[in-house]
Image (cartoon, rainbow, N blue to C red):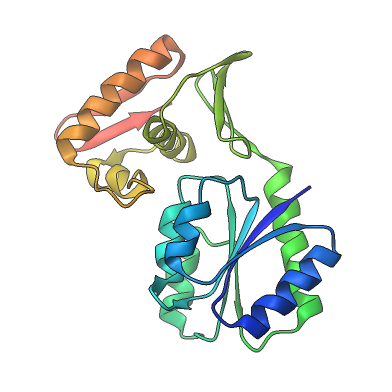
Length: 215
C-alpha cells in the first residue's frame, strides 16, 4: 500500500487532501511545517505532496530532505511563476500543480505519478542493482551494507551512468539529509570507502582535477 506525505500548512486544504487520499486507499501522513517534516523523513514514503510556502521554510527545503530517497514529488502551490516551475522540475519534481486545484485531477496525477515510479524501480550500475523503492543495493542477491551517504553517492552515480560529474555536482546531490554540509575533503574519503565496498563490480573513474565517472 502506497504511503503519501503531505506538507501543507492550510488546515482546510490539508484535511480535504488527507480524507480524499485515505478514501482512495493510501496511507497518509500530514505535516504542517518543515520542522515537522524532518521528524518523519526516515519513514518510507512513495510520494510527497509539497506546499511551496511553509511557516519555517519552503517546498524546496523539503525536497532537499527527500532527494536522497526514492520518494516521488508533486508540488502543490499558489506560486505559478515560470522560474519556480522550472526550478522544481530541474530539481526532480514529478509534477507541479497550482492552487486552486480540482481534486479529481490531483488524484489522477497522484495515481499516474505512483504508477510511473513503480514501472522501473531499479537502477543498475556495473554489476550492482539498486532498488530505489526500498533504498537498498545488491550485488547479485547479496545486500550491500552502505551508510546513508554511501547509498546517496551510489545513487548519484547510477542516475548519471557514464557521465562525468564534477565534485561540486556530486556534493550537491549527497547533501546530508539532516542538513549537515558534506565537505570536499570528506567526498574523497567516501569515494574511497564506496570503491572498497563495490570492488570490481563498479568502475568509479577519477577524472583528474575535475571529478568522477562511473559505469
